[in-house]
Image (spheres, rainbow, N blue to C red):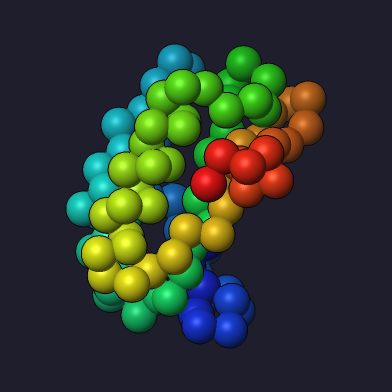
Length: 97
C-alpha cells in the first residue's frame, strides 16, 4: 500500500508474484514505484500459502532491506502485514520494524 504524507492510500498494488514456497522481491522495484507515485510511506503485505501468518526469517530480512532502501529516498515503512488462513500478523505490532 502506497501512502501519502498524511497516510492516506494512494494505491494498493501487487508488485511481485511468488510460488507456494517463495517469491523474489526486488527493493529497487519497490523504490521506483514509490517514487513514481510520490509516496511518503508504505505498508507491505503478502500471504503465506501455508496458512500460518508468523513472519519467517526471510520475511524479516527482506523487510529490513526494503526499509533501508526506502529510507534512502525518505519513504517510511510503517508495517509489513502477513496474511494466512489462520489470521494475520503485523511486524510493527510484533516489534520487528
